[in-house]
Amino acid sequence: MQIRSTRRYLSIPYIVFMVVFVLLPLLLIGIYAFSDRSMMPSLGPATNFFGSSSRYQVLFVSLIFGLLNTVVSLLIAYPLAYFLADRKVNKNIVLVMLFIMPMWINFVLRTWALRDVLNYVGLGGGDYPEFATLIGLVYNYLPFMIMPLYTTMLRLDKSQIEASQDLGAGPIRTFRKIILPMTMPGVVSAATMVFMPTMTSYVISDILGEGKVTLFGKYIEIYFTQNQWHDGSFLALIMLVLIFASVLVSRGFAKKSQKGELNVW
Amino acid sequence: MVKKVVGNIYIYFILFLMYLPILFLMVFSFTDAPITGMWNGFTLRLYRDVFLHSKIMPALLNTLLIASVSALVATLLGTVGAIGVFYMRKKPKQIMETVNEIPVVNADVVIAISLALLFKITVDSMASLGITLTGNNFFTLLIGHIVLTISFVYLNVKPKLQQMDPNDYEAALDLGAKPMYALRKVVIPSIMPGIISGFLLAFTLSLDDFIITSFLRDKSFDTLSTYVQGVIVKSTIPAELRALTTYIFVITSLIVVVNGRKKKSKAQERANKRVILRKGVM
Image 1 (spheres, helix red, strand yellow):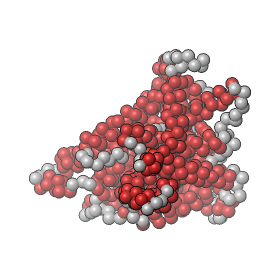
Image 2: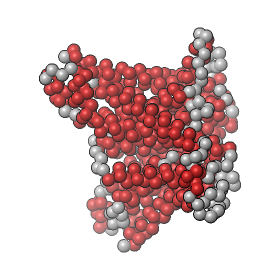
Image 3: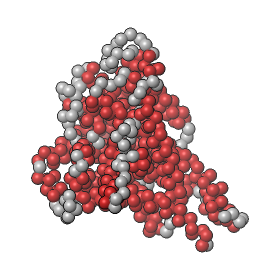
């Protein structure tokens, strides 16, 4: 019995690694976010952030971009997923895979390709930084939107839709009362998958916004390059809180809407 | 009938838009004009020159180097860790499962700055002891990539451990096998598919990374992502990159098609979905 229980000690290197390189760094972020350069406890980084309007404006702008990207992607992806999952329209699984495939090409290269196309057709970030950034975000996140929606659409209970039609409901009423509620879990998980990353990523806005669009994650990079560890840590902490909240929301929703197996994505 | 037509038009229209940028680069990879969108006569020159480019090739090799080394270490550490955690008591096991989720949901930029902070503090405190350490180097970059990928190795191996018949291992011990021998001959082979898919996922995640690399690399060490980002922001983009994108597109398509033909288990699918989730957090 002694020997058998020793297997669990195999986890030691893994635990040490996770403690030193995952937990400890986050603890340091927490400490640095609430201290000054001499490492005395301080609310300096917090007041720096909330005191300067330009800094929390970035949070506001990022929220808007996150929201816009989520809504636009959703409007495109929802009917798309519906058609892809409808056997009357599409029976080809390869077609579904084609929608995810761009994801496996290096995303900096992809974003560069998009920039060249936008410049070519005269919609580049030089003239329309916000528009180009939004297009870039939608282009990048659409696959993440399509997949969760597609999987929920596959599980749509067709008999309920037919019942609703048989009982005389029009297409709009059927959509509002039957299809939308049934696909809501997919909508929520798709939205959380797109919303948070939009706020924290800054590469797309860097390349397509031509330096005129600054998202939240960019500020962390700016602080990092300027060696402003305390202010940078405070921003990272805010981001952590937002991520934690969005994970709680989406998991809570997944649990409520789905008995039995939890569909996290 | 109307639905079928409308649906298909919509599907193919969106598909066309999604592939338009890559197709655009591919078309102009057959001409050597400096700006994409200008036609300078048909040539295959770029397809040869990309291999001779003094910046692109090292960046590509660096990308492959860090991806393979980090995936290898993450697979080793993550697999052994998953086996160990699997046999832990309930409470500590639950704690480790939660800790394992952190890098999965965390934003890249937070992972990056938290590790950069850790390394900065290490360098500072060593300096106060009179020991001089260099700042970012290959090792710091390696740690960053392992943090990014190790949780996915764990998530790939775990379902295989759950599917394994626990009696097999017990039987091996009863027949006189030493624990390590039984582990090697019984446990490892039965979780092998999980280990392999974990490795592949770790590899692809590392290939695509930009943020963690840019925070933790030595400034002279460029991967494809950091190199392309650098030239886009500062100067004109070498035309050879169009040929490289085409190469990558063709290779990726082949892999996706070959992989798509294989049937995947439920657990593996779920782990793959987690990666899609992760890739969203760029």
